[in-house]
Image (cartoon, rainbow, N blue to C red; front, side, top):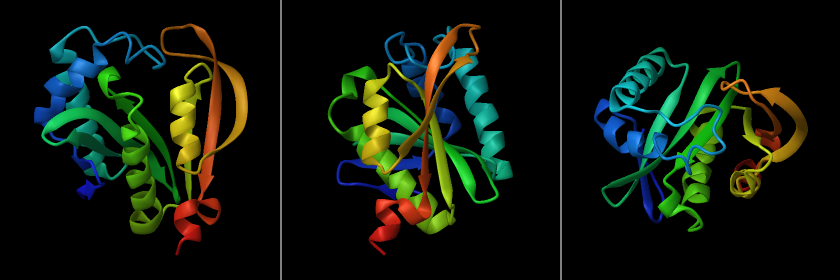
Length: 176
C-alpha cells in the first residue's frame, strides 16, 4: 500500500531500494543510535533487503521506502506483526533530519497501522540518547513506558527507552 503525505510518498520497499538504503545504513551518523554498526558493503544491504522482502511476503513485516519527490530519504517499518500488535522502526538520512519529515512519515504509518491494518498496539524502542527519535514517537502518539539497560547487537550495554501506542489512546483513534 502506497501512503502519501503533504511532502512524502511511502511506497512498499523494493529490491532496487538497496543502494539508496545502503547510503543511510553505511552512514555512521545515521547509525549512531542503531542496534548495530554501519553496514560495510552494498552486498550486505542487498541481502538485508532480500530478507526484508521475504518477511513482507509472509505478512510478518511491512517496509516502506520514504521518498521526497523521487529521492529515497529513509525507511519506516512495522515488524513482528501478530495478534494485533507490531513494532515500529524508522531510519532517515541525516541531511533530512530536523525538517519534520520523520514525524510526517511515521504518522502516516501509524495511521495506516491502526485504521487500515487494524492493529491495536504499536511498540518502539530507542536508545535514550536519541532525543530526535523520542520526539518523533511522542508527536505520533507514543508514550514512554520503561527505560532499562539492554545489550545491543554489538555487545555494548545501552540504556533504551520503550514506547507504546494503543489504538484507544491514539490521536488517530480519537479523531474517528
